[in-house]
Image 1 (cartoon, rainbow, N blue to C red):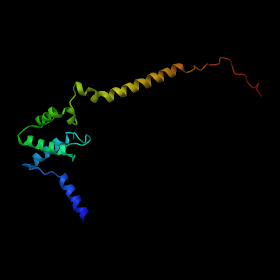
Image 2: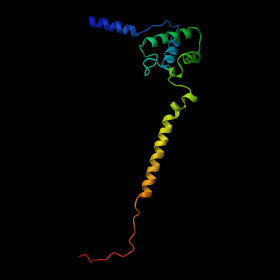
Image 3: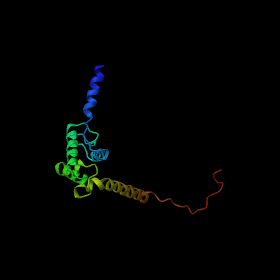
Image 4: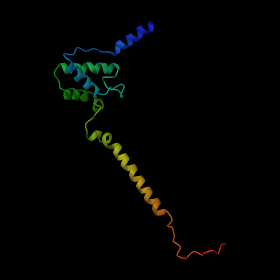
Length: 141
């Protein structure tokens, strides 16, 4: 019984009810917090994280929404404070080029190494000689 009580308390702390004006505002909040990374957990978004910082950032996002800020303005506010790391989908720019194109560059480099290795082995393989002499028939028997 006590275990159920403590489990209920833990679950109650994970739920953070906010006074949304309507369902559309709540959906907008959920979508926006799913696009933002928890800075403590790093593999969770703000909507799913139970970290204290994530809870504070959810309240900050909610307050910015109440002030009439657009989604882009809210994201820019968080990027100004925490850099592009706070975005799950960072923009393509000089600082994020390796992030966006690094895997493709590594894949192309690996393919180039495979092609060069196969060509070198084909050139190094002995060429089979064709014997022009007619085969002797029946001498071995």
